[in-house]
Structures are given as structure tokens and as C-alpha cells.
Amino acid sequence: MPSKNTEIMERDLEVIWHPCTQMKDHETLPLIPIASGKGIYLYDFEGNSYIDAVSSWWVNLFGHTNTYIGDKVKAQLDTLEHVLLAGFTHEPAVTLAHKLVALTPSELTKVFYVDNGSSAVEASLK
Image 1 (cartoon, rainbow, N blue to C red):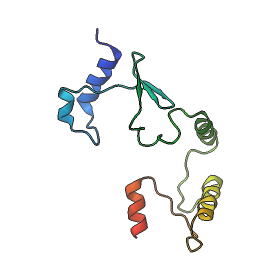
Image 2 (cartoon, one colour):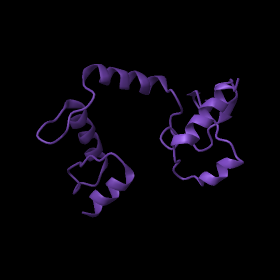
Image 3 (cartoon, rainbow, N blue to C red):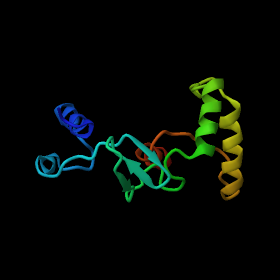
Image 4 (cartoon, rainbow, N blue to C red):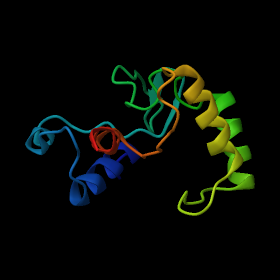
């Protein structure tokens, strides 16, 4: 019976094209299936640990499963997951916008929220 790592890797390669990856490489360089993360470490299904040297892009400042951030996200999810800012608003968006405006030069008085880097560049150029 294959290990959980092997099972996940094989199932992945059946259906996923990975970004920033030459897929042909995975014919000889196996994927590393990750089960969990804590701080700077990632853990596979067999308990092996890996230093997350790429910082999985989005957690590089605070690490995986940061308790403070997780608690805040959970509290927000219990209140309101999402509301579109097209005719609506909500307190966390307003509070964050005021904090951001306070950090910017005085002529920058508005915040336009986007969900990713390429959208941010596009919105900024427009």
C-alpha cells in the first residue's frame, strides 16, 4: 500500500498544473505533499519537516498557523465572511482604510481594495 505522501502526490499529478513549475520536472523530482505547517516549518504526512524557504509566498512575515492571525480570522468568520464593497461597507474595511491612509502621503486619501498583486498593479495604473 502506498504511503499517504505517495498517494497525494500521484492524485495531484493526475489533475493539477502547478504555477511557477516545469511539470516535466516532476517525472524525476517528486512533489512534497504537505499536511501541515507551523512557524517556518512544513510537515508532510509521514512527519518529515521542511524549512519553508519559499515562505509559501503569503506567510513569509508571520509563519504558518500564526495563532494571533488565526484567532482574528476565526473571529471575523464568525461575524462576517465577506461583503462586496459595491453599495455596501463594513467596519473592518473602514478601519483598515483609515490606518492605510494615515501611513501614506497626504495627497493619497482613498483606498481601493483588490485581491491580488496583478490587480493592484492594474488598478494603480488606471
